[in-house]
Length: 89
Image 1 (cartoon, rainbow, N blue to C red):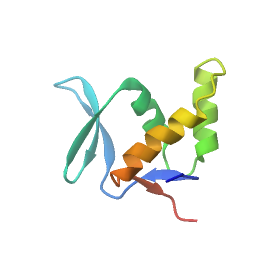
Image 2: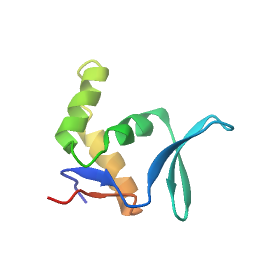
Image 3: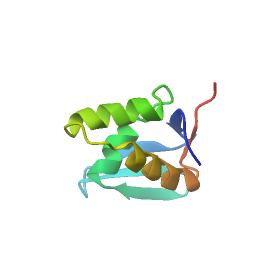
Image 4: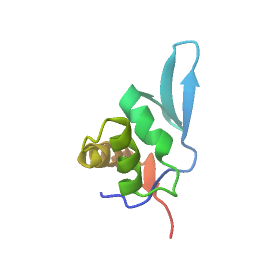
């Protein structure tokens, strides 16, 4: 599953659990605890940015590192759970 313009699925949202001091991806069936890297990626997933756009922003943050394959792999894994989908048109 390769995303061109990913977005969070309906009913899915990022949330900061202040009690546990963890970032989670909330969805109707539960929650997925996110590490810092996953949070940075998902924070850019808005249905407007392309995968290339997201990778470019993160590459800039990480001193030019080529992160596109890692970003695609992360999004594919979360997408397999139905939490990230392709934005329409």
